[in-house]
Length: 367
Image (tube, rainbow, N blue to C red; front, side):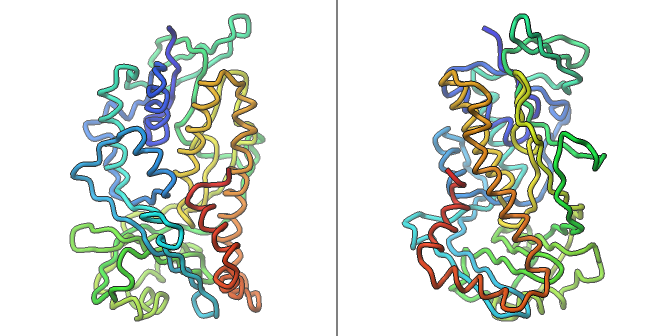
């Protein structure tokens, strides 16, 4: 039996292999990162949606001795302007709206489960090229100068578009940078325990995620138009206010340009794209990885039910487009000086049906 080849051993690629294995489907995961003694050493924190955690639990991923912080409360507000909204897990009868976990911890847990699975094998090679064999309806892959044949090639490597005129992609204009790091906040009120803060500013969104790292107790993703001079404790304190607590320490460890993009075609013949190979989202609302997990889940369901890859693209389209639109809108509209814009946040609280739909959208995606 031929292996389904998955190019990319990131969290989405590993999750896809494990989902296939749950149906006794064999896969071969290719990634040169596996040559490294510590393949996933990135210290950044990511947010898993409630729906993503449910998918991981079905696969019995062992998270023993791994820090996972539940997000039971989300506070959304607009700096310097009127308007805010709050969401509580108890209102939707779930244990948490989401969870924070270290990126490397998540990858290592998935990799450990995959390494112990008889249906999954690995090669520490980078996919060099691939070609569709129309006569035999298969894909011929080349990695490390070796040839592999697969009925379906799943690409989950991530993609950086260097050419803005590349017609395979749609680029969403954005001139924001994400500054990622850690914050220590003292004297946090009890009501804000397990709270994620999303604060919109005229420079871009700022998020604080509950997570313990050394002496720090929050991870921070601070988006602005590129100025490092804004990244001071004083500016952060002014931006989030003293109601949360007093900021004692701040360190920025990474900075990267935010480019939102989508691959126009999710599949070509028997080659299919998921995760960051299919699209990249602005980190506002932390939906990029969660969308990738849902894509893998829908793709595996498509394969198991012997449907075409066109059916996969159709079944994931609404979820994908809604996340691309929502994250792009949220990351940009609040940087505009639009009168009474903050009213939109209050409307979410005022209209229960809208609030429920909004919350479920980010917990489960659009289904």
